[in-house]
Amino acid sequence: METLRKTFAEGQPFKTHSDCEVILHLYRQRDKDLCSLLDGMFSFVLLDESVTPTRIIAARDPIGITTLYQGRSSKNPGAVYFASELKALVDECDDIVSFPPGHVYDSKTDTTERYFKPTWWDGDSGAEGSIPTNKADLDLVRTKLEEAVRKRLMSEVPYGVLLSGGLDSSLIAAIAARETEKVALAQLSLRQKRIEAMSGTATPKDLLVDEAATLAAWPQLHSFSIGLPNSPDLLAARKAAAFLGTVHHEYTFTVQEGLDAIPEVIYHLETYDVTTVRASTPMYLLSRKIKAMGVKMVLSGEGVMKFLEASSVI
Image (tube, one colour):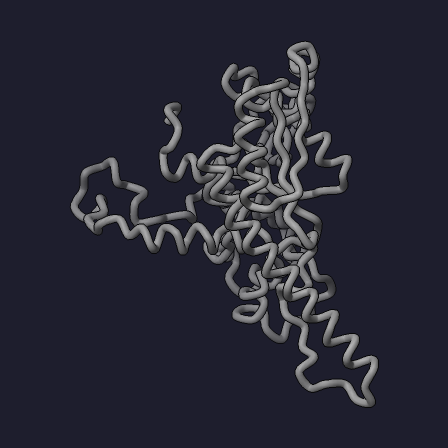
């Protein structure tokens, strides 16, 4: 978002530090084409009351990480409803769909179009040029993965990592631990400069705030794991945490606690899919523990698993 501010919204009067405000300025310049400029996880509904009739722009990130639902009601024809949870629409709408990832809705034309158009999108069609022919660049894969983790650590709140001890989560934790150490060193350097500045007669010219020094990171990365007592995942996570030097938090739950949590898990997931509920129940229990510690954001290895097809489920 900082890049977008400098590139497309330079000189614009920003009133907040929110990463959402840049969307307003991009809308004035690029209209609904702003979506292709956003890089990250998002879903938003923009209300433009400066035109008649009032215009609504709604969009969801290319992968569909954040949820967004769209509904219509036969009792109120012409109205369009949006919500991040299905349960918010069931009493109002009789036609509800999951808003498709990588798409944008425009009330001006009452249409939903795909803005995410990667070169590999039509790979299954077999058309000429639709299937990549370049050899796998493993160095590039590593670079891009590190960049992805680094970008998501640009957090204004304390963060941590979910660690099972498997390849995927351990890989993400290793990158996050290294980046967190860089942040801690940057914060230490900034504190030392401030101490020197306070003890001297003049402010040093090199007292510049490094972006890394402003991130809301603990001095040491915290990792979290959960499982049944004596489960192999807990042992593997413990070993990985010791190797990476994270502050590790290990929690256990009983079978009965897992069964008792299922109704709440289904309520929040809004699905009865067995595989999803089964995988999400421990995560739900763990998330409650993490939230109680004041941690607002955690990384996991799920994206790595899907990207590298490391799971037998794929």
